[in-house]
Figure 1 (cartoon, helix red, strand yellow):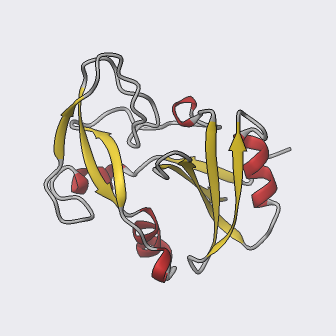
Figure 2: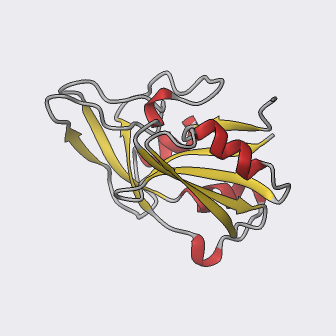
Length: 163
């Protein structure tokens, strides 16, 4: 089956802004990651390397999407923490699903073109897979975008958009 969506990392022009002032109006916090690394990076959809210095910033994915598309997320507009590289990185080049966002437990949140939550899907221990969950949600023609999030903290991991 052909995918009718594409995975997106945070866009390079948005990353430049976030490295100066984040979506909560704060200066980014440099963080030296734990010895193992492995934090999910939203700039390249990879994982941090051991002892790598990265930044923790506040990011508003629906607000940014709304600016591009004219959506009005209203109460669904939220700001949350994400890790990004302090310096420019190679970004996400796709195609498919980035390995850096995979995990045991994920939630997929579907949004209409207006920015309202339409539904969601819990992915537990790989059942269903991210690909299967996205195919199911994008089977509804009203779905314009789906966010992939971690279950434990609700953190935004990546955005997919209908193509």
